[in-house]
Structure formats: structure tokens, C-alpha cells
Image 1 (cartoon, chains in turn brown, green):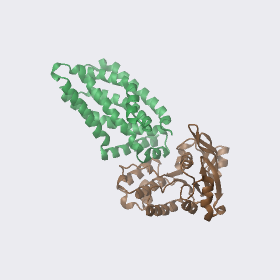
Image 2 (cartoon, one colour):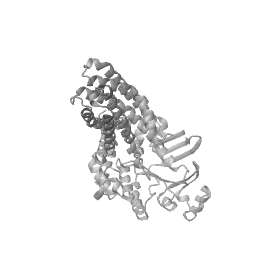
Image 3 (cartoon, chains in turn green, orange):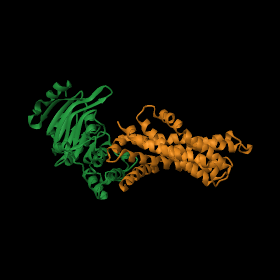
Image 4 (spheres, one colour):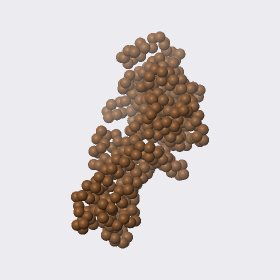
Length: 245
Length: 224
């Protein structure tokens, strides 16, 4: 770890001048973030604001066009494998193989992450997402809500220090959303650093310690939880995005 | 090193379990290949002494086109639920993903070929026991699997993936197909290893070049 990396190790996630170009269009531009260990950042923004691109940049799925991303002090360009061990990603896509059972999926990902004592770990995470009884069912036969619970189990199988949640509640019915929230709250409590994107202002404000609003790839608003007037936040969001909620 | 090969095996294991459960690739490829053989067996009269001339070509036409059909699905399974993203998030080098998927391609293609070859020998009235033919098939399949896996990954993110794969794949594997046909013809004539050595060397050289180049460029192919 060089001096620059050591200095950014105080942050769980740090971005400086992060930009991502697709063709000649900026999906992200001049993104400066500092997220402390154990902190929860919620990213709001309309469709096309750059939320998913931000999560993908933080998770090493895409390379920044400019600027830098450090995760636990590690430059994501030079330490991709080490960064990937530290992050768990839950998206609206489950990343699960429909023709494999939940158990086989967890076994596959657990092996890829070199999870020690994998059998025990699978049983533990399956219990945490209340999927013990469906562990040997094929993923394709599960409801959307159960699949998303299995996706959480997949994301945490290697005990990540950082959870990146990209609109994890999309496509779930209200009951499944409540259950998902309870499960995510368990995993995202304590020492785990969380970055979550969402359209749901209420949910985001419940979870956050810090928020940003993205619009057209730029941070147009940022605040600590203590600075947010919850009652008027919908107006703030509407002011910065032009979209009323 | 041990961990690396374990992960290659893990990807292969995952593909094999899924394939054994659905038989999606093997069934469709096998049916297609058998149909090609049956149609050709009616087109050419086995008694007319033409089998030595057309037999090797028929066999490799069925292998090649059936192979293209199967290769389309090798990365197709990774598109479901964006599993390729999950795979890319794993803390492994990209070449491990390539080798794992290539092992799956090789195994599925070889499994189909092992079933097709005896059917070909029976339909075309040829001797049943041909260990030389098995070696030729295995070597050529390794080359097919290297290039095919690479182009399968490349074509996955395109709208015209079904068309793009054969357009990219077939011109590149022409050396292996030609050498495979020539070596097969010599094997069917009962010629010695020495007579076949030039064609076998071409296949092996092509395999090595394909494998090295595909391993090196795979990283660029699946990024973003």
C-alpha cells in the first residue's frame, strides 16, 4: 500500500473527481465522496442520474474514465480482486443461476470467494434470510421476493465490509419490501459500510447517515442526516431534480 | 496456483450441474448434428464408394454447425439474471473465468461428438473402432472451444448474437476444420500416424495460438 493509498484508508470509500463517459456523454462527472467506515450513504436521483453507474464504479464492474476510487484505501484500478473481496453487491438483478438451487448458488459463490468453512456459512446466511426450508429449491421456482432474499445471502456469503445496494427493492410487493428491509437492516448494521441507491425517499431517509442527490451524473445536493429537514425533503428533492414525489 | 485451478473447476462444475439438470445445450446440439448426418447419409449413396471423399466433410460440417449452436448458449446462461455481473464481481482474474467456460464448452462439445461419431460410422458404413479419429476430434474440439468461448462472450452483448457468432467463429477456425477433414480422411483410409502428422501439427499449432490469444484478449472482451 503506497502513501496515497494509506492516506485514503481512513475512508471506507473515497472518490476524487470520478467521471464516467459512455460515448461522449457523461454518466458521472466530478464525483467527490468520502464515506467513513460503518457509515450509510443513500444516493437519490431520477432515472438516468448515474446511480447505477456510481455503484458499478465502486464495485469495480466498470473502470472510471477519470478520477479515482479507493475502497478501504485500495485503488480500484490496481487492486480489483482485493476490492471485490471487501464488497457485496445487491442489485435489482439477483446474479443467481435459475437452474441451480439456492444452496448450489451459494456454494458456487462461496468457492469463488474462498469462504472458509463454507457449509456452516451457507447454513448461517440461509438462516439469516429465512431460506433454510427452500435451500434445495431451484432459484427459478422461487418467488421474486424469495429470489431477492437469496440474492442478499449471495452478496454476504463472504462477509463483506461494504454493502453496495442498487435499488434492491425494485419489483417486490409491499410485504416483500418490508421483509427485505428487515433483512438488509440486519446486514447493514454495525461495522458494515453501506451505499444504497433508491427512489424511495422515506426508505432512504430511514437508513441514511449521509445523503446525496445525483442528477445528470453530478452531485447536486449533499447533506448529513442531522442537516436534513425530513418534512420538507420531498420539496428539496423536487427542487434539485425537477421531479416531484 | 491450486486455488486458481479450483476456481476454474468451480465454474466448470456450475455449468455442468446446470446442464445436467436442463440438458439444454447437449440435447439441441445433438438433435441438430444427428439430423445433419441423416440428411447427408440419404444424399450420398454409401455403396457408391464416395464415402471416403465426402464422409470426413460431412462429419466436420455436423461438428462445426452443431458446435456453433452450443457455443451460443455457453455465455447465454450468464445473461440470465445478469449472472455475468456476479461472476465478474468474484475476486478472480478474468482468464480464470475464460478457462472455466472453455472447459465447459470443450466438455459439452466433446460429449456430443462422442455420441455423433459412432452414428456417423454406422450410417456411412465405416469401421466402428477408430481411436485415431477420436484423437483428431479431441484436438480439433480444443481449438473450437478456445475460439468459440471467446466469440460467445463477445457476441453476448450484441443484439444479433445468433448471427454474429458464426460470422466471427467460422473464418477463424477454418485451419482447424480443413486440417480436421484431411486428417479424418486419412484416418478413415487407415493411413499411419506419420501420414497424418502434418495435419495433426496444424491442429495442435492452431490450438495453442487460439488458446494463448483468446486468454490474452478475453479481459477486454467482457469488460463493460
